[in-house]
Image (cartoon, rainbow, N blue to C red; front, side):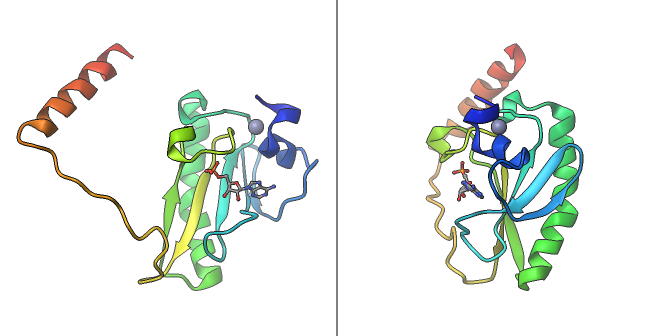
Length: 141
Ligand code: AMP
Ligand code: ZN
């Protein structure tokens, strides 16, 4: 799904309005239309990729390179104390727009945003077994 079917491709093409904060030839950053906190910004590649694994590594590297200065500017603009860099990858992870994007979400201490992580614990030997499974799948991918 790209081009006319993809809302972010249409934003890149200027067919849908957006409030842009940064762009170069490979990436675009604009304000999220329904911010979790003031200044909530989305950073996207200009070439369509539905998921992280479909995105060219050099484009991902560009995105990571931009996050540093962009995150600092976003935090400065809203006088936040930090930010979450979030990528919902896949429907189960909350990805609604199938064009890779990084959320930059400004945060303050005790703001209650994204505050509760449902941590659990591995049973004895569980972490080692899990790591072994991941290593095996990495080896064949
Ligand atoms: P995700 O759930 O990670 O796919 O997030 C998609 C994000 O895109 C949501 O936070 C939406 O608020 C945001 N969004 C959707 N449409 C627009 C739009 N036209 N302009 C800016 N942000 C948008
Ligand atoms: Zn797209």
